[in-house]
Length: 159
Image 1 (tube, one colour):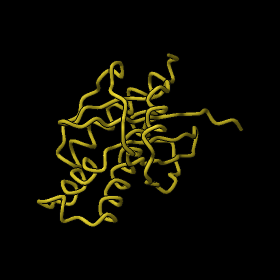
Image 2: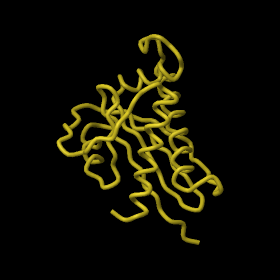
Image 3: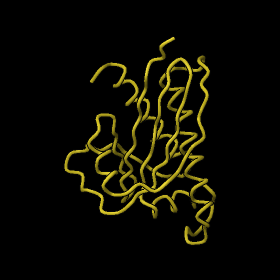
Image 4: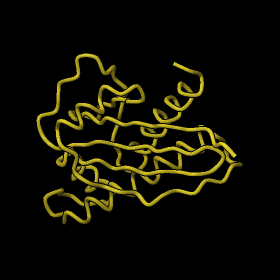
């Protein structure tokens, strides 16, 4: 793994763990992707891009039930069953937005300015999720009983 890729992976690990803890009172730990079971249902895919001295993208994949649980924690609600789907999706977008900001600060420092794209959240079928899990830039987090795959891809800017 190249140094830049390793630095990006470490910054993403730290950002996801920190943001889940701070925003959703959820502990997360990095696990090895080996022996990870294949997904048999669609997941929620949250995706955001960034532009600046470097450009790239990052994303999170999560089970819809886990997304609802995170949303209820973020919004300070007791039961995830009381949430509207739009509330869940908005909370996941905000979580991703904060993860991206933390990642950029940890990876590049406070000085460079970045422009973030609009976070997008959409369902991703099981087959596509399983293909993403084989990619080189995938990170896997365990959060309670849930698995949260994440990825980050950074390109150096060519002027």
